Length: 247
Image 1: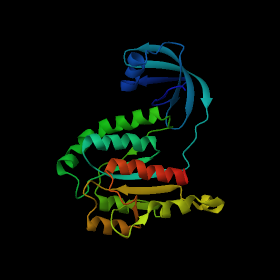
Image 2: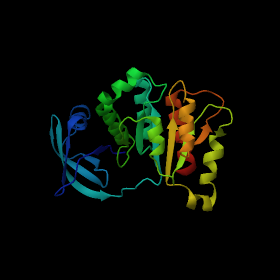
Image 3: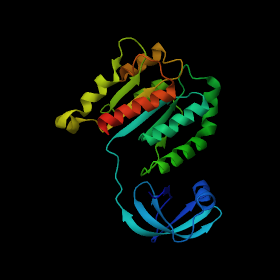
């Protein structure tokens, strides 16, 4: 299977790859003129031939326009900031599982030092999303939003989307009971939401005030089971369930 890379634009039957991706293609993959790769600008997809390779620059000619499938399901992930290595692992896996938009949350129980450091890591996070999207052959990487407070993030999303906040509290509905009916049967498929917003809290969980803000904004409390999962594990479990039911 051919590797895929993201470029800024296509123009006059050609494209240019720059920066880290070009350096990886040139130095690690040892690209040579004549080799074929897939290129995406986030809207179109082309089969392209390498024409010239330099240290951090690869030039292509466009060979064949390829089908570019837009995702049927848009998943917004509201993700509380946790320890950086685990947060970045969660970003990578969320990308592979199809998240289309990611909002880092400064939750009440997120470590304040991590929240303060988050803006400085935005460029690194963008790179992780881009590289993960290339590896998983997506049309485009997820959109990374600025760090937000949970209460503001809960209010910001379309009332027509299905909204879920993961909860360990007694009485939270099982994920299966909430998600499965949305994808069962032909009629359900027709009415299934094209957008899902899911909020996943920090290690210490959401505060009562955050739960109240979520439910006031139309989020349903949902449980992934009796076991308490780490934030990054919950990301994988929840997104996999959503994609299975609706993707």
